[in-house]
Length: 299
Image (cartoon, rainbow, N blue to C red):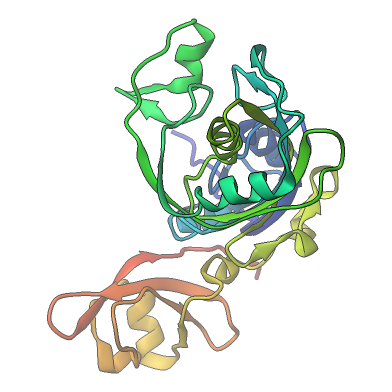
């Protein structure tokens, strides 16, 4: 059997996703632009939404677990008076209310009730699985199933002055797994009517922001961040000599040998700053690798 070529392109891509593309579409396009099949994303973004989508490429796909669960920040617009089947502007209208008398103060007071630790029912048009099936796949078949509420945290739900009658710009900072569409719909319900979301844009995923995001059509190997950037904001240590050799072989080590304390994870980099492995606390006073990167380097 012929040996499958190992990818030679490795890193983290911060992409500014265009509207109308699914996260899977972005991954498929990126494979062609980067010349490798080994591309994955760290979490879906609605097809109609734009903004930050973080990809792992080559060996960095193994680091995607450290990119999931990061907090997010969004902007968008809540349209009062109209509910839709998808909770956003792409769906069919399912209800209409006269909410012209609703004031900005009332909207802000209702938004305040949707901050902090709350529970959300995932929308039917979402990638969440119930009994092994994606909700959006069931929705396309006209099937609606019971969904258990999910705990999420909304740090901020700021509402600005109306940009049109009944249309309010919002900024949301929230935990991973929060549906901003659901927040918009719940806001409408809290005000005695209904609402949907439009123009959703993701400003950041953890420490990755729009200021470094690359338009999808401009993505290239030269625009990738180093694999070590997948651990941005987490502690790292430099290893060399015999310790570096042990790390490359995935050895369990005393924490003192690696020079770390706590639970981790810790990125372990070589003297040139390249990520070699990610270590975690082990039993006793030892640490062990969660993964060791094997990257073929030129020369």
